[in-house]
Length: 131
Image (cartoon, helix red, strand yellow):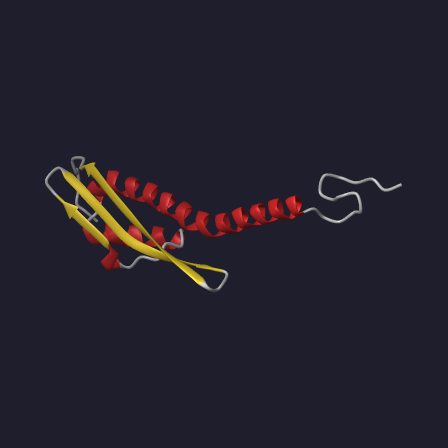
């Protein structure tokens, strides 16, 4: 006596419906595998840039840029110094980062995802010399 489950028919063959759902699940997992890492890196770098902007009163612009580039490297974000813009006013700082990531699907299709980080923070009073 053969016991059949939901994935097979009475003769033991896999049903079309089961194959369809396996394909859908595999597609969702593959797409997540390709899309999640760049977006996770984006959000982590954005958090790091917000922290750096809050502490910008302690650093000169070049030191701040170097610190941000090191953190971008830590999160595997492909940015160069030219992708980073720092504008400092009397009582504010604006940090803008623009970059793109090319994602490859199945070796045939590519998608270029553009990312933009823009952070505006008020500057605190600096009590010492900028490093």
